[in-house]
Length: 134
Image 1 (cartoon, rainbow, N blue to C red):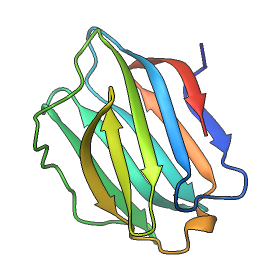
Image 2 (cartoon, rainbow, N blue to C red; image 1 turned 90 degrees about the horizontal axis):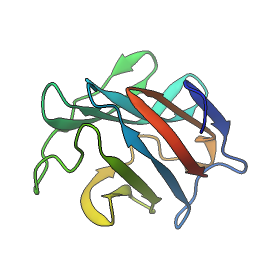
Image 3 (cartoon, one colour; image 1 turned 90 degrees about the vertical axis):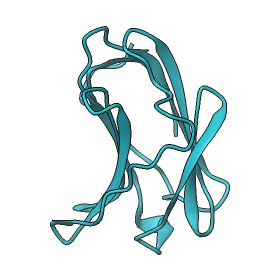
């Protein structure tokens, strides 16, 4: 098990075909958790499952300002309270592709275009972390 909040350097930054995999279990009474991919003080990708809103919010925080949220889930909320999960974030040239439990969920277009600057992974919230691959 990994302690929360979890922080790890992504050595060499991100680049197309690089993957981040986060596995664990959602707490039975979970409200939300987040996975952040950061470049310095900027959050290039904020992945924020919200069980109280039944969605996964995606956003970026650049120069201390949040951008526009993306919330649409074509297949509905793929995460459940009290259940294990694996979130796979694949960095591509123009976007992050996100799969949950082996099923593609959405894409998030890059708002920071120098991908090599994205060198920090943060995970925190109402989960138990079992495994991280970065």
